[in-house]
Length: 98
Picture 1 (cartoon, one colour):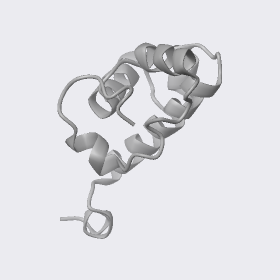
Picture 2 (spheres, helix red, strand yellow; picture 1 turned 30 degrees about the horizontal axis):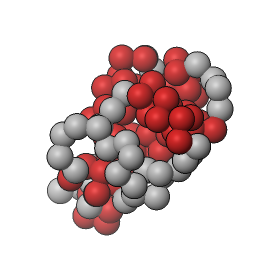
Picture 3 (cartoon, helix red, strand yellow; picture 1 turned 90 degrees about the vertical axis):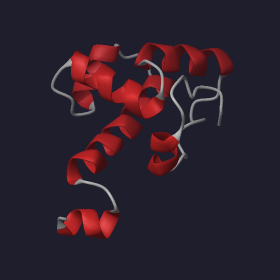
């Protein structure tokens, strides 16, 4: 087990991706930037990697997340959820469960 995992309870890659997803959720809910632009600005090297990581972490696609948050005017519903809670949620969209 690495020192990072011992200290933070997750791998460095998982921690970095969690930070990237948090940043992308903020951008999706507060800007009108294209999803591709947000993916790159969040540190992902491709749209497919971004979509995969986002869906695994949040439970819906970036586009679904944006649509929900633009419709409800609730820009940070999932923002304050601890990463552990996001990872342990059952499969399916988490949008609207804040």
